[in-house]
Image (cartoon, rainbow, N blue to C red; front, side):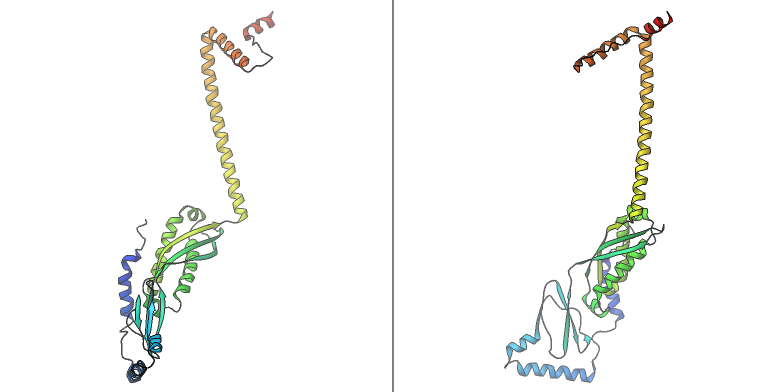
Amino acid sequence: MSQNKIEPAANEESDTKVILQSDGDPSRSSGFCGYLLTFFSFLLVFLTFPVSFPVSVWFCMKIVQEYERAVIFRLGRLLGGAKGPGLFWIIPCVDTFRKVDLRTVSFDIPPQEVLTKDSVTIMVDAVVYYRVFNPTVSITKVENANHATKMLAQTTLRNMLGTKSLADILKDREEMSEQMEAVLYAASKNWGIKVERVELKDVKLPTTLQRAMAAEAEATRDARAKVIAAEGEMKASRALKEAANVMSESPSALQLRYMQTLTEIASERNSTIVFPLPIDFITNFMKS
């Protein structure tokens, strides 16, 4: 893994403390009217509890699942931290709450048209995995944390790929995913969002560029094949030269080669057998 990669899990607690300290004291006084409304709400619940127990329980008792947390507001002010999982109580007419899902969420970044550093237009899409690690901050700091994370991922993808060449994008996908993950977490941690993973799914090239790259690859393969064939011919000619030198030193070796050739022809069941004549015999005949 890259040394520049940010480790979100180790910094979640410290980031949360910094964010909450900047908000001031969440349990500050609500004023006389706030206390008065709270008192009447408690009194209403107390008076109606013996008479309408099911109704009071229905409005006061709430349950959140293991993977959820409830952020409670009393008279519009944040009441402590997130509640849950399990059972908690609220005061009717005074308290409101919002549920936050802590499970990992994934979404696809729509294909983005990007102009690379070497002036090539490509279409790139990716997938992002993230989760909420601070429910309170995700509710109080941003209107819609999920939508904000999606928009941030799209802009970050375009900005990062715009500084890379096409060769770097095709070659270093894993490194670019790690860099994008670090950039997204650095921006989204103030919203209580932890980006866990970013993966580039597909890089779509223009049709003309695909044809040009295919032609270039084919020409490279043809050139390599011609070089290999030429090297083979050169080695074969050297081997033939060495064999001719050996046979010139021993005339009987040439006759043995004739016999071996006849044996190979006879094994194929051919009806015609060609007897090779020595070159020296033909030369003498032509001179005479």
